[in-house]
Length: 313
Image (cartoon, rainbow, N blue to C red):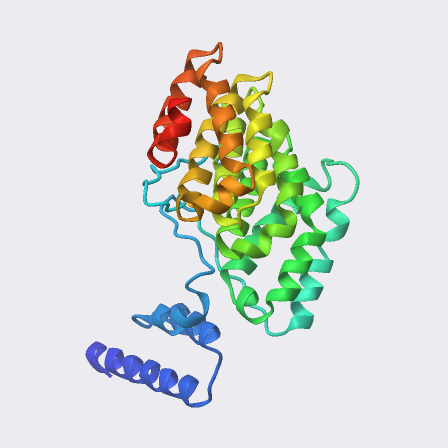
Protein backbone atom coordinates (compact mmCIF):
# COMPACT_ATOMS: atom_id res chain seq x y z
CA UNK A 1 0.00 0.00 0.00
CA UNK A 2 1.41 3.42 -0.93
CA UNK A 3 2.08 6.09 1.69
CA UNK A 4 -0.78 8.21 0.31
CA UNK A 5 -3.23 5.32 0.54
CA UNK A 6 -2.03 4.47 4.05
CA UNK A 7 -2.55 8.05 5.15
CA UNK A 8 -6.02 8.13 3.60
CA UNK A 9 -6.94 4.90 5.35
CA UNK A 10 -5.79 6.26 8.72
CA UNK A 11 -7.79 9.45 8.22
CA UNK A 12 -10.86 7.42 7.31
CA UNK A 13 -10.43 5.26 10.40
CA UNK A 14 -10.14 8.35 12.61
CA UNK A 15 -13.24 9.85 11.02
CA UNK A 16 -15.13 6.60 11.60
CA UNK A 17 -13.99 6.49 15.23
CA UNK A 18 -15.19 10.07 15.70
CA UNK A 19 -18.64 9.12 14.37
CA UNK A 20 -18.81 6.04 16.59
CA UNK A 21 -17.91 8.00 19.73
CA UNK A 22 -20.64 10.50 18.97
CA UNK A 23 -23.14 7.79 18.01
CA UNK A 24 -22.63 5.94 21.28
CA UNK A 25 -22.95 9.19 23.25
CA UNK A 26 -19.52 8.90 24.83
CA UNK A 27 -18.92 11.78 27.24
CA UNK A 28 -17.69 14.82 25.34
CA UNK A 29 -14.67 15.44 27.54
CA UNK A 30 -13.48 11.84 27.10
CA UNK A 31 -14.18 12.00 23.35
CA UNK A 32 -12.03 15.11 23.10
CA UNK A 33 -9.23 13.44 25.04
CA UNK A 34 -9.24 10.31 22.84
CA UNK A 35 -9.33 12.26 19.58
CA UNK A 36 -6.63 14.64 20.75
CA UNK A 37 -4.36 11.70 21.62
CA UNK A 38 -4.85 10.33 18.10
CA UNK A 39 -4.04 13.69 16.55
CA UNK A 40 -7.52 14.32 15.14
CA UNK A 41 -7.87 17.99 14.08
CA UNK A 42 -10.19 20.22 16.17
CA UNK A 43 -10.55 17.50 18.81
CA UNK A 44 -10.81 20.13 21.55
CA UNK A 45 -14.11 21.33 20.05
CA UNK A 46 -15.81 18.25 21.51
CA UNK A 47 -15.08 19.43 25.05
CA UNK A 48 -16.15 23.02 24.53
CA UNK A 49 -19.46 22.76 26.32
CA UNK A 50 -18.04 20.93 29.33
CA UNK A 51 -14.50 21.98 30.13
CA UNK A 52 -13.86 25.35 28.56
CA UNK A 53 -14.30 27.13 31.91
CA UNK A 54 -12.22 24.64 33.85
CA UNK A 55 -8.85 25.11 32.19
CA UNK A 56 -7.06 28.40 32.89
CA UNK A 57 -5.55 30.21 29.95
CA UNK A 58 -1.86 29.40 29.87
CA UNK A 59 0.85 31.14 27.97
CA UNK A 60 3.93 30.13 29.90
CA UNK A 61 6.26 27.25 29.17
CA UNK A 62 5.41 23.77 30.48
CA UNK A 63 6.04 23.09 34.14
CA UNK A 64 9.27 21.32 35.04
CA UNK A 65 10.70 20.45 38.44
CA UNK A 66 13.61 22.82 37.86
CA UNK A 67 11.40 25.84 37.29
CA UNK A 68 12.03 28.47 39.95
CA UNK A 69 10.10 31.38 38.55
CA UNK A 70 7.17 33.30 39.92
CA UNK A 71 4.15 34.60 38.08
CA UNK A 72 3.73 37.66 35.93
CA UNK A 73 0.50 39.56 36.00
CA UNK A 74 -0.96 41.51 33.13
CA UNK A 75 -2.35 44.98 33.65
CA UNK A 76 -5.91 44.91 34.90
CA UNK A 77 -8.20 47.10 32.85
CA UNK A 78 -10.57 49.60 34.42
CA UNK A 79 -13.48 47.65 32.95
CA UNK A 80 -13.33 45.39 35.98
CA UNK A 81 -11.75 42.36 34.35
CA UNK A 82 -9.87 40.23 36.88
CA UNK A 83 -6.10 39.87 36.80
CA UNK A 84 -4.64 37.19 34.58
CA UNK A 85 -1.58 35.11 35.28
CA UNK A 86 0.77 32.95 33.28
CA UNK A 87 0.38 29.46 34.70
CA UNK A 88 2.34 26.37 33.79
CA UNK A 89 0.02 24.03 31.86
CA UNK A 90 -0.90 20.56 33.12
CA UNK A 91 -2.23 17.47 31.41
CA UNK A 92 -5.96 17.08 32.24
CA UNK A 93 -6.80 14.11 34.46
CA UNK A 94 -10.16 12.48 33.69
CA UNK A 95 -12.08 10.33 36.15
CA UNK A 96 -14.62 7.68 35.20
CA UNK A 97 -16.72 7.87 38.36
CA UNK A 98 -17.35 9.66 41.63
CA UNK A 99 -15.80 6.72 43.46
CA UNK A 100 -12.56 7.07 41.51
CA UNK A 101 -12.38 10.79 42.34
CA UNK A 102 -13.02 10.12 46.04
CA UNK A 103 -10.26 7.49 46.08
CA UNK A 104 -7.76 9.84 44.42
CA UNK A 105 -8.44 12.60 46.92
CA UNK A 106 -8.46 10.28 49.94
CA UNK A 107 -5.06 8.84 49.01
CA UNK A 108 -3.53 12.32 49.22
CA UNK A 109 -4.20 12.83 52.94
CA UNK A 110 -1.32 10.82 54.49
CA UNK A 111 1.41 12.81 52.71
CA UNK A 112 -0.03 16.11 54.00
CA UNK A 113 -0.06 15.05 57.65
CA UNK A 114 2.51 16.31 60.17
CA UNK A 115 5.58 18.29 59.08
CA UNK A 116 7.31 18.38 55.73
CA UNK A 117 10.15 15.83 55.45
CA UNK A 118 12.55 14.50 52.87
CA UNK A 119 10.20 11.55 52.51
CA UNK A 120 6.95 13.38 51.87
CA UNK A 121 7.69 16.68 50.13
CA UNK A 122 7.85 15.24 46.62
CA UNK A 123 4.58 13.39 47.18
CA UNK A 124 2.98 16.62 48.42
CA UNK A 125 4.10 18.48 45.34
CA UNK A 126 2.86 15.65 43.11
CA UNK A 127 -0.53 15.74 44.87
CA UNK A 128 -0.86 19.47 44.25
CA UNK A 129 -0.13 18.99 40.55
CA UNK A 130 -2.67 16.14 40.47
CA UNK A 131 -5.37 18.44 41.88
CA UNK A 132 -4.56 20.96 39.14
CA UNK A 133 -4.94 18.14 36.60
CA UNK A 134 -8.32 17.19 38.08
CA UNK A 135 -9.48 20.80 37.76
CA UNK A 136 -8.44 20.74 34.11
CA UNK A 137 -10.28 17.46 33.48
CA UNK A 138 -13.93 16.49 33.83
CA UNK A 139 -14.23 16.27 37.64
CA UNK A 140 -15.32 19.87 38.13
CA UNK A 141 -18.27 19.57 35.77
CA UNK A 142 -19.37 16.03 36.53
CA UNK A 143 -18.55 15.68 40.24
CA UNK A 144 -18.45 19.30 41.37
CA UNK A 145 -19.63 18.84 44.97
CA UNK A 146 -17.27 15.92 45.64
CA UNK A 147 -14.27 17.76 44.19
CA UNK A 148 -14.93 20.98 46.14
CA UNK A 149 -15.48 19.06 49.40
CA UNK A 150 -12.30 17.07 48.82
CA UNK A 151 -10.25 20.19 48.17
CA UNK A 152 -11.64 21.82 51.32
CA UNK A 153 -10.51 18.79 53.35
CA UNK A 154 -7.03 19.09 51.82
CA UNK A 155 -6.77 22.87 52.25
CA UNK A 156 -4.47 22.73 55.26
CA UNK A 157 -2.08 20.48 53.34
CA UNK A 158 -2.21 22.72 50.28
CA UNK A 159 -1.23 25.71 52.43
CA UNK A 160 1.69 23.71 53.83
CA UNK A 161 2.93 23.39 50.25
CA UNK A 162 2.37 27.10 49.62
CA UNK A 163 4.40 28.07 52.68
CA UNK A 164 7.27 25.63 52.20
CA UNK A 165 10.81 27.01 52.02
CA UNK A 166 11.31 25.14 48.73
CA UNK A 167 10.64 27.89 46.19
CA UNK A 168 9.63 25.70 43.25
CA UNK A 169 7.28 23.65 45.41
CA UNK A 170 5.75 26.81 46.88
CA UNK A 171 5.20 28.19 43.39
CA UNK A 172 3.39 25.00 42.45
CA UNK A 173 1.11 25.47 45.45
CA UNK A 174 0.37 29.06 44.42
CA UNK A 175 -0.45 27.88 40.91
CA UNK A 176 -3.03 25.51 42.37
CA UNK A 177 -4.67 28.23 44.48
CA UNK A 178 -4.89 30.45 41.42
CA UNK A 179 -6.46 27.58 39.50
CA UNK A 180 -8.94 27.09 42.34
CA UNK A 181 -9.93 30.75 42.25
CA UNK A 182 -10.22 30.79 38.46
CA UNK A 183 -12.22 27.59 38.13
CA UNK A 184 -14.29 27.53 41.33
CA UNK A 185 -15.14 31.22 41.64
CA UNK A 186 -17.88 31.66 44.25
CA UNK A 187 -17.56 27.98 45.24
CA UNK A 188 -14.28 28.99 46.87
CA UNK A 189 -16.06 31.48 49.19
CA UNK A 190 -16.14 29.16 52.25
CA UNK A 191 -12.36 28.72 51.99
CA UNK A 192 -11.35 32.35 51.43
CA UNK A 193 -10.61 33.21 55.06
CA UNK A 194 -8.35 30.21 55.52
CA UNK A 195 -6.55 30.94 52.26
CA UNK A 196 -5.94 34.62 52.98
CA UNK A 197 -4.65 33.89 56.46
CA UNK A 198 -2.34 31.29 54.93
CA UNK A 199 -0.85 33.87 52.59
CA UNK A 200 -0.24 36.62 55.17
CA UNK A 201 3.21 35.34 56.16
CA UNK A 202 4.17 34.65 52.57
CA UNK A 203 3.28 38.19 51.45
CA UNK A 204 5.82 39.51 53.95
CA UNK A 205 8.57 37.09 52.89
CA UNK A 206 11.99 38.53 52.19
CA UNK A 207 12.42 36.24 49.19
CA UNK A 208 11.15 38.25 46.21
CA UNK A 209 9.68 35.29 44.30
CA UNK A 210 7.66 34.13 47.31
CA UNK A 211 6.32 37.60 48.05
CA UNK A 212 5.42 38.20 44.39
CA UNK A 213 3.68 34.84 44.13
CA UNK A 214 1.66 35.67 47.23
CA UNK A 215 0.67 39.08 45.87
CA UNK A 216 -0.59 37.71 42.55
CA UNK A 217 -2.32 34.72 44.10
CA UNK A 218 -4.22 36.80 46.67
CA UNK A 219 -5.14 39.26 43.91
CA UNK A 220 -6.52 36.42 41.78
CA UNK A 221 -8.55 35.10 44.71
CA UNK A 222 -10.01 38.53 45.48
CA UNK A 223 -10.92 39.02 41.83
CA UNK A 224 -12.77 35.73 41.52
CA UNK A 225 -14.61 35.09 44.78
CA UNK A 226 -17.75 36.86 45.94
CA UNK A 227 -17.23 40.20 47.64
CA UNK A 228 -17.38 40.25 51.43
CA UNK A 229 -16.40 43.05 53.86
CA UNK A 230 -13.77 40.71 55.30
CA UNK A 231 -11.77 41.13 52.10
CA UNK A 232 -11.47 44.83 52.87
CA UNK A 233 -10.35 44.04 56.41
CA UNK A 234 -7.53 41.89 55.06
CA UNK A 235 -6.44 44.76 52.82
CA UNK A 236 -6.59 47.24 55.71
CA UNK A 237 -4.45 44.93 57.87
CA UNK A 238 -1.93 44.54 55.02
CA UNK A 239 -1.72 48.34 54.74
CA UNK A 240 -0.62 48.46 58.40
CA UNK A 241 1.87 45.59 58.25
CA UNK A 242 5.35 46.22 59.61
CA UNK A 243 6.83 44.80 56.40
CA UNK A 244 6.95 46.90 53.24
CA UNK A 245 5.71 44.27 50.77
CA UNK A 246 2.20 43.79 52.22
CA UNK A 247 1.79 47.56 52.41
CA UNK A 248 2.70 47.78 48.72
CA UNK A 249 0.42 44.89 47.79
CA UNK A 250 -2.52 46.46 49.63
CA UNK A 251 -2.77 49.07 46.87
CA UNK A 252 -3.03 46.40 44.15
CA UNK A 253 -5.55 44.32 46.06
CA UNK A 254 -7.67 47.39 46.74
CA UNK A 255 -7.66 48.26 43.05
CA UNK A 256 -9.02 44.81 42.26
CA UNK A 257 -11.85 45.19 44.78
CA UNK A 258 -12.70 48.71 43.61
CA UNK A 259 -12.95 47.59 39.99
CA UNK A 260 -15.30 44.78 40.98
CA UNK A 261 -17.50 47.02 43.13
CA UNK A 262 -18.09 49.84 40.66
CA UNK A 263 -21.35 48.20 39.63
CA UNK A 264 -22.32 47.56 43.28
CA UNK A 265 -21.54 51.03 44.60
CA UNK A 266 -24.45 51.31 47.04
CA UNK A 267 -23.88 47.87 48.55
CA UNK A 268 -20.14 48.54 48.87
CA UNK A 269 -20.83 51.80 50.72
CA UNK A 270 -23.48 50.24 52.96
CA UNK A 271 -21.11 47.44 54.05
CA UNK A 272 -18.46 49.98 55.05
CA UNK A 273 -16.24 49.15 52.10
CA UNK A 274 -15.89 52.72 50.83
CA UNK A 275 -14.95 53.95 54.30
CA UNK A 276 -12.31 51.24 54.71
CA UNK A 277 -10.97 51.96 51.22
CA UNK A 278 -10.68 55.66 52.08
CA UNK A 279 -8.68 55.12 55.26
CA UNK A 280 -6.49 52.50 53.54
CA UNK A 281 -5.66 54.97 50.77
CA UNK A 282 -4.88 57.73 53.26
CA UNK A 283 -2.61 55.35 55.15
CA UNK A 284 -0.74 54.40 52.00
CA UNK A 285 -0.37 57.96 50.72
CA UNK A 286 1.26 58.91 54.02
CA UNK A 287 3.47 55.83 54.28
CA UNK A 288 7.13 56.32 55.09
CA UNK A 289 8.16 54.16 52.13
CA UNK A 290 8.15 55.92 48.73
CA UNK A 291 7.22 52.73 46.83
CA UNK A 292 4.14 52.27 49.00
CA UNK A 293 3.11 55.89 48.41
CA UNK A 294 3.67 55.51 44.66
CA UNK A 295 1.56 52.34 44.47
CA UNK A 296 -1.25 53.90 46.44
CA UNK A 297 -1.41 57.00 44.22
CA UNK A 298 -2.75 54.89 41.34
CA UNK A 299 -5.34 53.39 43.67
CA UNK A 300 -6.34 56.87 44.83
CA UNK A 301 -7.12 58.02 41.28
CA UNK A 302 -9.18 54.90 40.64
CA UNK A 303 -11.11 55.53 43.87
CA UNK A 304 -11.64 59.17 42.91
CA UNK A 305 -13.38 58.17 39.68
CA UNK A 306 -16.24 56.55 41.58
CA UNK A 307 -16.15 58.43 44.91
CA UNK A 308 -14.90 61.94 44.02
CA UNK A 309 -16.30 63.59 47.15
CA UNK A 310 -14.56 61.10 49.44
CA UNK A 311 -11.35 61.43 47.48
CA UNK A 312 -11.32 65.18 47.95
CA UNK A 313 -11.92 64.98 51.69
